[in-house]
Structure formats: C-alpha cells, structure tokens
Image (cartoon, rainbow, N blue to C red):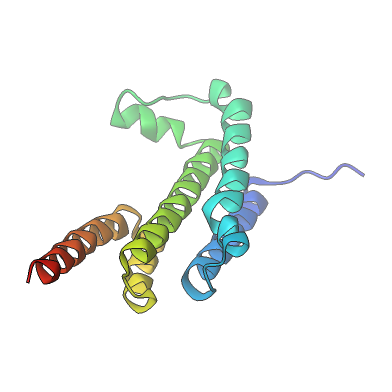
Length: 148
C-alpha cells in the first residue's frame, strides 16, 4: 500500500504542532524541559518540513523572489505555498519563545505577556513590535524607579 501525504495533510499537521507550541508557551509553566518544546523542538520540526518542501519543489516551480509578480507565480504551487506557510509558523513560534524568555527576564508578568504572544501567533511582526515597545517602556520605567 502506497501512502501519499498531501500538502493539505502537511498543512494540518504543521498547524497543529505550532498550536500546541503556542499553548505550551502561553499557558504552561516555563520549566526548562517544557519550554524547550516551543522554543526549539517544534520550530526545528517545522523548519525541517520547510527545508524538505523547498528542496523537493523549488527547482520545479515557476517564479522566484525578485519581484512581486515572481513571488505570486512561485506561490501558485501548493507545495511552495505550504513551504511559505510553515516558514511563518516556525519563525513566529521561535520569536514567540524569544519574547517569552526576554519578558520573563525583565519581569513582565505572564498576564501582560499573553496578549503579546497571541498577537505574535496571529499577526507575527505586530506581536514583536508590541513586545519591543512594551520592553522599552518597562525597562525605562524600571530604570526611572531605580534612579529615585
């Protein structure tokens, strides 16, 4: 029996893996062994899927990265479109873990971290911008308090 995995199945599996990573990151304790899963393990697995998809399908696809039209043509391939999506999943989760680690280090409460992590999960760079802004405000406030 020949089992063929479709792009749709890979899309579903990668999305589920990323969702589990975000749930761990947002809701579970940040113990080292558990934090390793969303910080490295899931992004690595999804990253390997990305690499496999690109290695297997990029040379057979039309388009490229030199213009918007080339990118549009590139993403006409389901496999390359899936690769682009899992690229987002892997990087957003990795950045979410980075945000959580940095926020913990400077003492931002988990309650304040949650909306930033959710924004990063859904909107990627918007969550990163929110965190960078909050980190700047939080560290300046802390420095101001120490100066008193």
